[in-house]
Length: 207
Ligand SMILES: O=C(O)C(=O)C[C@H](O)[C@H](O)COP(=O)(O)O
Image 1: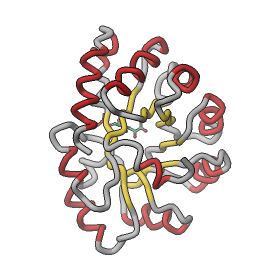
Image 2: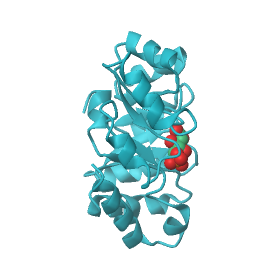
Image 3: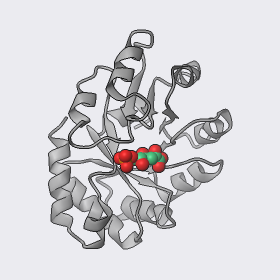
Image 4: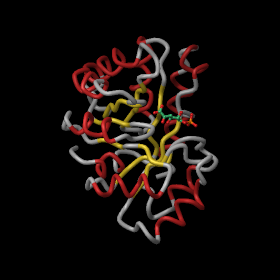
């Protein structure tokens, strides 16, 4: 997997997780896989993020692990060293993009305006994250920009659930959606891996 476009093809739904306990990483990855979800975006929002990426890469190699919430220079390289195979950012600055580019990993950089999307396109990037999707205009916004920007494809994230994911996935300029609903904190804390698997199965069926 070398390009952002390939990241969009991994799974109809990318589970976005913020882990409080690194011990949850492996059973979570296994539950997602059993449900048919082949990737996981582990955010660096919690201290468990990097070690969780390391564990998943080493112990659940079948799941493609990405690193999310990359907002600062230096984080992407640490994520690469931990075993992340792609990078996700909520927004993009030139400095951050240069830093992420230097890792050689594919990335989904976050945009929420037409101008931001055009700036990424100027760098040759045609697949990106649309964040925060619902507050930024959601499905109608993505429909509107498909006309002037037909070459761009998106992974909308933020405010997406099993109830509205299908409407996004039906759009020709959407490759996948991201969401935290597959790994609710209370299910992880209670070790309810069967329920996580059921959520993953329901999400996988959206594709
Ligand atoms: O941390 C990041 O890099 C983000 O982009 C934020 C996450 O994508 C959203 O928090 C997921 O959104 P929800 O599914 O609405 O919970």
